[in-house]
Image (cartoon, rainbow, N blue to C red; front, side):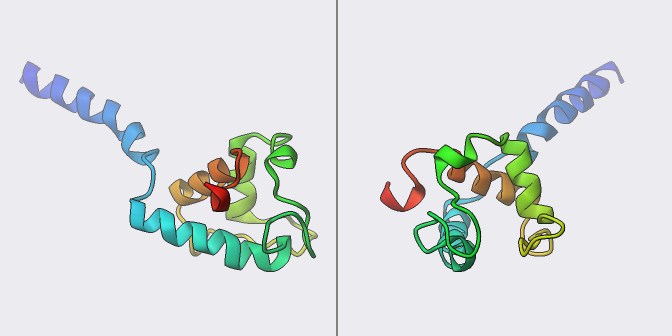
Amino acid sequence: MHYRHWSHVVLLGLLPMLATADPSPSRQAELETLLYQDCGSCHGMTLKGGLGPSLSPERMERFSAEAVTGIILYGVPGTAMPGWSDLLTEQEAAWLADQLKQEPPPSSR
């Protein structure tokens, strides 16, 4: 019985790591396409601004990764920025937020 208790503790300890794992490589490719096609339709095809503001790493450094993830998932009230929580998981939105905060931008890697 004591052994079972510790195995549950170990499994519970692993859950946060599973929840924060990156999407699969094929899903990452899909998300990068979404970033440039869907996000790019408002933020400019190079993400340097358009109808929506620039998504450059310099601008994104003002925001925490958690804030960017929240904006991706839930949008910005009172603006044209929609939430994507119906189409993206929190893990996928966090991956996109991480990509936006990196230099160089994903398309030039």
